[in-house]
Image (tube, rainbow, N blue to C red; front, side):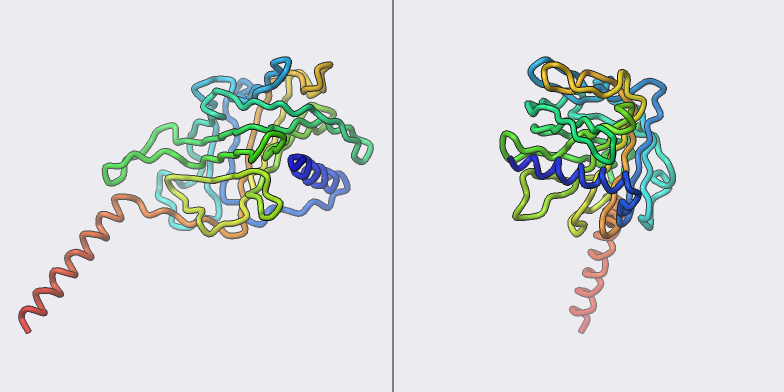
Length: 262
């Protein structure tokens, strides 16, 4: 099952972390920290499946920041108020059973998600530029290619009181899911691979595998770190593009006048 490769890769990362030799992300371009006072993420065991979604269907309040990106407009500089939603609050269904693996003497319970999931971060207060509304800071969409494939795996840490999940744009020929990154402000066309790393804390109750083979229901706080081998480029604002287009049109008009004068 191709989803097993994703799980094995995550366990490899966890194993490295245990012995203190984990490799750092190449370049962080964005970070997210939850600012809500209550747990904003909910994993729900439905008996024969499970869902992962933001506790509030309208989204969870987070602090979002771009890093290592030059030329940011003032409204994107530093930490900005944003709203995190996971599948718009609808949840992501999984039919894969949970697993337990002993690494370095610590038991890691894990749960792979074998269905599409979308994680989105949008400005709490959208901005207008050139008559266009801009709000999408970063959206990650993961779509498994077939039943049993998984692009995201929750891996328990610290005795089940925390968890992690790391997912990257897959490479061929081992790709078993499709992952895309989109933004109103960043261009991801030349940034491959891109990695999304999530950290879950304050799990309540702690992560355990239930009698049905799925992880038990729990709530948690979550944070995210996003990295790539090259820093994404800023997308020119619609207003700037309009000014540039007007300038080019003016230059073309002047050029035509000079041609006719000759």
